[in-house]
Image (cartoon, rainbow, N blue to C red):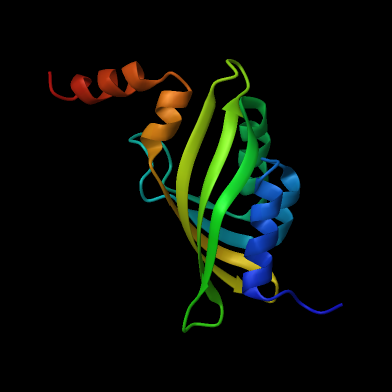
Length: 147
């Protein structure tokens, strides 16, 4: 069996994401993969390491939300043959409330030997806070540091 190209690996990840989160997504990552979330909220990790940590992240996420679609997808090849950039819109629903959410995402990923070794995901964390009804928690956390 031939190894998937970086473009094909990311396209497969986005197809799985469209009905995820699901643990099968983790199978596209190397055992020692690194996941970065530069725009993460205060108090939340900006980096996770290894496939099994990501698998646990997906498992926990599946209890909280259900992704319904990924659209407006653009996958860009770069001058580095291992690196691709994906832009997409993720739509889903909060499991507890049924509230729908939409998030614009930009992912930069490095793929080697058919597995994602590194990814950096950029999305607006406020989209999640609004969907999960946590805006007051954010405001309280921000104002607590000013007293």
